[in-house]
Length: 307
Image 1 (spheres, one colour):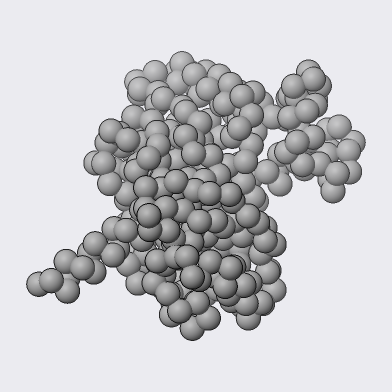
Image 2 (spheres, one colour):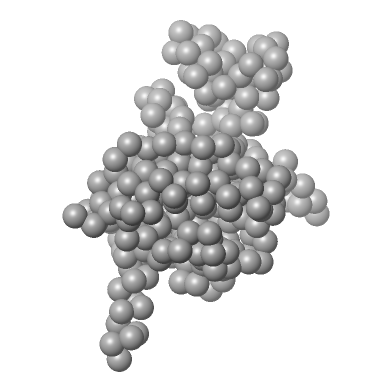
């Protein structure tokens, strides 16, 4: 069996593990993502590589930002501010001498669902990855939509207000990011912000705390409005919800409830509501999709050399 190192680089943690040629992942491990230094980031990636160097064919990576997946060029690295206008493959190959392919995390999640998950057999779909911001990936006509500049699916940057300001407070990624939800709960429930995390939110919500439920429902209503906008623009058959909190049944219940309500309002009944489903692979989808991107890129390179 051929094995690869699958790596999902996030704004807080780097998740990694062995993945075989069929997309089956062994144990996922975690390391803290260096936030202040490119050199530290490369060294952490090198330490991860060293553990698996003798076992793997190559490295399949997903990461935030606008990524040219054919070449590995990163226009930016999202929350990783030290990554800007650089080729990630060339950078990492110096420390990790193996075959490397890189894809945007939202697109990788979409590919994971397309290859082995809830987008199998789906012509048009959208994945929404709920986290610090909101990641996105779009399947159009059965294929990943990358866009002319590889920025299709950068949903965090959708404006939610109509004034001249491009303040991030009024972008989709902030409005439906967990920071906004946690801040709302902190204010409404008088809980110190630093004590709030996803586990506490859903413990209180599942216990029936009315204030927490109100904040969570408002969060889901905001998300449902943008789901309506995406439906009008792209008309997907299915929208898949991923991210750590997507495991919570209550979250999916509230999203579906708010989406149903919006599609019953005046003028919105003209459109078909999409199916809303939880990610099949959860937090593994990005690594599975990163491998799918790796395999597709290698196939293209092989065909190019064969001509």
